[in-house]
Image 1 (spheres, protein in one colour):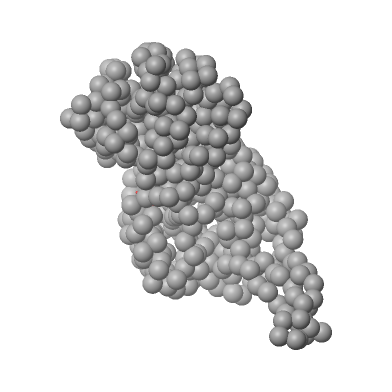
Image 2 (image 1 turned 60 degrees about the vertical axis):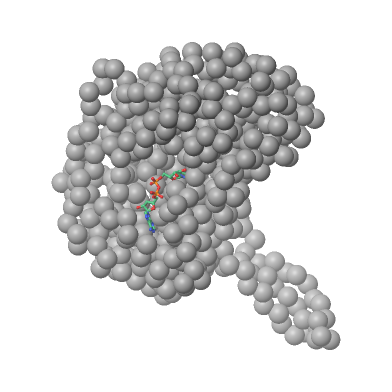
Length: 490
Ligand code: NAD
């Protein structure tokens, strides 16, 4: 291992500019492909979280950080450069700790989000922080109105393990660009991904002490402290819908802004004028990427009833050909699930699928030849309605459900008949029909005929139980801003 970024006997916390131990001692971080302990991470306790929030509050209230746009742009670009300088170590950490297939570290698992810090830096530099609304005479008083955009203050960022860098940087970049200070509480499964960034910030950037604080912990309830503390102005959360609900409920007591990126059960709609085999093969492949641990993955495949058998055959052939394996192997698409707990969750859903009468066409178990590692076979479930548990609930594994539809309106109805509304895709040839379907589906992003919506300048987020607000793009940056209107009598 290359690991000079994280000491294997205990990666540090970053609090008030200091790299330090946690009050709770240390906790292990595990390679999900081998089940071996990689090493230890600092286990923060409530006192550490208190100090981190205090440091962020003080840095916001007493420094020029929130006012010096050019300096923030400089710091973000400096961070991007330092991350790029340490790319191979970060890649190794990401592959071994998150079980992320190495090929995706060249994109959204690592290099993409690092590059995207440049988008945030550009916004810090070029954003219209003030807009002259001109004069008006409300109540007969002639007034000159100035609209100002200002940072919200202290942001508590709580993140999951599936795309650790993508999600950490999609919060850190815009939050800092907007002039906020931050406490990041990463998932207990991926502490090193965050701790390595903390070390880089402390040792290779001019980001002032207290502006970024990184608090790793085995204890989930430490995240809850961020939602409760009155010194925190906003919580930016990505994770499951159940936890998001708890975050929002808890944040209500102090009336914090809550920004939520939650779960999904997105549909891939194949219209009857599409290349059915091509579309189904791509949908089947996509659900295996990173073992299906992506919130926006299309896990329901809606196909014309007349083409159902063909769709099942093609999807099964594709999924049957994808062998889960070592994420460090450059050819691996489907690595392990993150933990024993997550594999048990996926296996529980496969049992429910069988109990409810679903047909497991391919997969359904653990791959042969992998004694170690939290692997599950890519699994295709057919003959199950949209009302089945596996069609309604987020599984977060390489599991695809194929459901027949009876035309475009029925496909829209089925896609929308879900508590979630995160993403989806449409395949077809008639532009008018495609437009109607994309207008009808109630989700935050949609790909048409393989179009990719993921990009630094494109907002991402969900309708319904998939979240509140948008991450990335200009909209994602503006989530971290307050609006102030100053009226001067003329
Ligand atoms: P999770 O909800 O279990 O945990 C997410 C984070 O919340 C972790 O850091 C955890 O420690 C923390 N947490 C747990 N309980 C908390 C509480 N009561 N108060 C505050 N924080 C608390 O999610 P996970 O299992 O880590 O991640 C998988 C989930 O994340 C899936 O549901 C997936 O869809 C979702 N996700 C959504 C997006 C998106 O952008 N919409 C992106 C990635 C993942």
